[in-house]
Length: 238
Image (cartoon, rainbow, N blue to C red):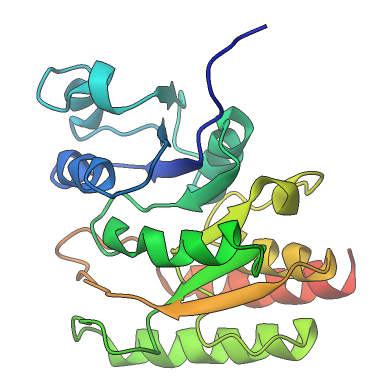
């Protein structure tokens, strides 16, 4: 049995074709003032050189990333998160997208809510607070607000940003939850199942550095349709 200390926070990084931003994300995560931190990175079948970067000295793989898991083929964010959650050792876990849209500097405020015993789950909202937000797509904002409203109607939560990629939760909150969605439907599925479990939710306002499709944004309208299906499926039929 290992005598290694249990990390306070496991940072789950699902990654697909992010060779331009991955090293910067890892450095930003390592710069956060968290006492004990573990990085679990799942590469979801990247074909753009990300895997070469993971094997190179540039990223500081041995010193920075604790666990790297390679999917043989691209399966989607949800599948990568399932793998990362299964490999994580921390008392608390946080999802960190590999595209630099979310700032790891926001971790300490969210973590304080969990370690103080107030929250089981903390979502970082792009729609509240005074932090910097890049101005990008109007219809994405409309879609996000609609999906959040629909999700809230079923969960009876009053979240402002259900679709956020910034989600932190204590290990006990996720234990026993079986996640099924392979792509971005993981966001409403996770919300529905955490809410059904009776978890205490908090939100904090976060900085958001959204990117354009030309810069590598991947979510599309089909994912919005799947999110609607996931909201109904995991709130009504599970």
